Length: 146
Image (cartoon, rainbow, N blue to C red; front, top):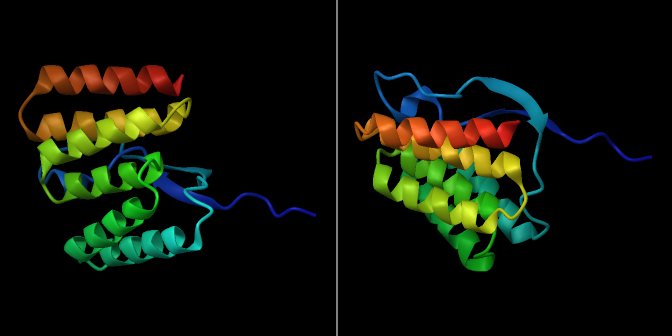
């Protein structure tokens, strides 16, 4: 008998912490199946470490863990997305956009992953004061979610 997939609350984009004083588009949490990020135990351990470090406010350490995981699996779109979200929360908006686009390039047919990356891009554009670019990114995310 197979266990049901793990359910976790995953926001569509980074939390409102990413852009102090501004609402974050699509940040409401909903229950979605936890994606299979990797089958590699080392990558899973590094991702777990990064998430713990992020939760503890140690974003530099989290970034280092994600970068190590990406050296193991450089084409892992979910790892690139995790790094994009981290860069967004760090206020590194240009890098968040660049990394989210890299994740999209590796996402293949994973529309949900593409959508959450477009939300990261939209939120980064909002933070940069680029509403037209943000609106376009959020529109793409919405289209992918349908």
